[in-house]
Every structure is written in structure tokens, then in C-alpha cells.
Amino acid sequence: MTDSATTPRPAHDQSVVDLIAERLTDALSPTALTVENESHEHAGHMGDDGTGETHFAVEVESTAFAGLNRVARQRLVNRALADLLATRIHALRIRARAPGEA
Image (tube, helix red, strand yellow):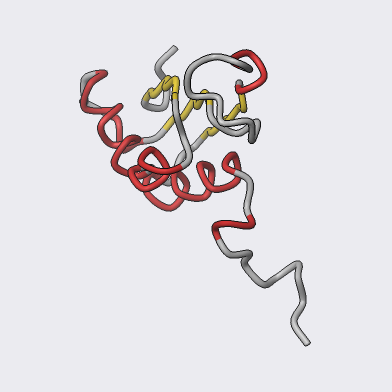
């Protein structure tokens, strides 16, 4: 018997919000992270597949972003989420900052 609280769920069973948070945490060790599902704002629009999990916003603060410009920061986020962007995420709004930045 397995304990569901300690056994990781397969990726297909996890919400996309949880997967995004997990991938960004693993890749960037953020000091702050917020992931929001904005799919309800895009219902019926292009990219809405009816799952309610297609459009997201992330705010991530990480020391990995120190000294990088906005494009380089977004590339790090996109790299961490590449498989999800190819299969489950239609749109992603990114706000990436280093600690101490507004």
C-alpha cells in the first residue's frame, strides 16, 4: 500500500498549475513564486481546449535572474517549462525578477 500524500502523482494526474510550480521550483529555486490559472479569462478564445488549463501567469523571483535582461529571464522560464509549453500550455504571461527588484 502507498501513501498518496508522499507518493508523487504522474504528470498527467497533476494540475498544470502544480506542474508549473514544480518545474520552476526545481529549475530556479525561487525565493518567491506565484502561478495563476487565467484560462477562465480566455474561455472560447483561440487556444481554449475546454480543459480550463491553457492560459497561465507566473511571477517568479530567483537569484538565477540576477544580471540577466528580461528576454534571458523569460528564456530560463520557458526552458524549464518546455514540455508543458509544447503540450499543455497555450499562453504564459511571465514576470521574472531577481531578489530586491520591484
